[in-house]
Image (cartoon, rainbow over all chains, first blue to last red; front, side):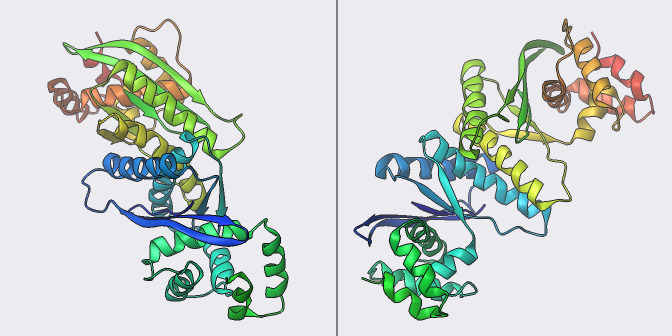
Length: 176
Length: 176
């Protein structure tokens, strides 16, 4: 399970990684922008993710690492959303790993400074989706894929191949 | 219920405010510094506060507002602990209020730049405790008392009297 935390929009994506193949299970966004209180917003982020974990029982959770904001106030607000998410992971008895946006873009597009559209496009292709997921869900699926690649034998090969500056074409080896 | 959030030590305090009198119920600190993962630390903060809320069913929760750190990384870490706390409040169907450390010191000691020891000393006196609570729990009880004062008729009077520069003696009116 991958999660892209946000105080208003949190993306999630669940996939199965088996025999070096990705099987898309579900993805979505949790939009709490219209809820009036912080307690309600964090509760909904938390409960939604907790229910998803209880339903799909992922083996692990990968969370997109916070971009370290220059603004401490923004960092505090994002931290609160991350706290709500991490408590859902902890309550389910799971651990989590973190990946930076750059690592995710590198893993998905083969280029750490790739744009959001490129990530969405590649996620659709990698998971054989009919439509491109929206940006938060695409990032969440992206961080899940990044986690699957890291530590798998495929990942080692992918990393080596990327050092040859294969950039976009580097992804080919992960494509089914 | 008052809470003083921290990523390692979180203080809590529960009291009953009835007929303009404070009745101490419980207080303590949640020390998660020795737990190995962030998921475990946030889970323990969350579950402990959630169980306390379920047991004591406070009418509302007052949280000490984050001192806005200059360091965004520190703000993110504190935000995560706050998220774990606020989700416990939200799951219990409660709302919360926030007070700055300065407001708490002003309410408890009558002086916004008071030291930790002064807060601990006054909390012991106000609640007829046998011992001074440790600093995090004292701050938590302090924020709970601050909340009781705000909005009560006593509070209006206390605020007016404080504008007369009564400083420390301003507390007298809240003393039983």
